[in-house]
Length: 178
Image: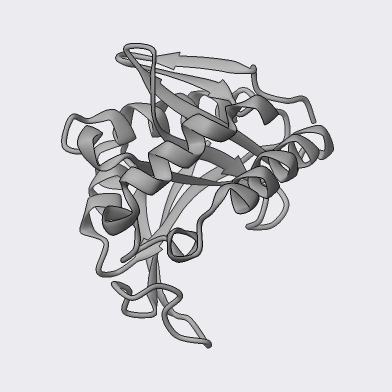
């Protein structure tokens, strides 16, 4: 199946594979952005260094297995968020996920990071579609998908309801055919 490169670049962002020694920068990015992330990211409510260690260890294992490719989003040499390609939508598909530190939003960086992931996903054998999923209340994530030419394909009510306090429990799914 192949794997994407450890480092991806697009415009003002460089994505680099998360490393186990990134614990402190990950912790700072999440801790400083807790209020910004809480409405959409359930992990923000309970984040601590132990959880960060678990994420970084999990990221290494998932990379090797080919199930997930998680990257630190950097701009001007600073870690500004996280993103990844995930094989959780069935054969031939990749899902993109992303979040940014609150001080770096509104600059187009999430769109640039997602564009880098689209390029990497297109280069992987066996991929016929890439998707972005987000809660219906998260219009910023929908804007990223729209700017990159994804097509809104469906709204799905999640059987267990919302995962985070800002969510409606309705997931919007966007697709880009490769």
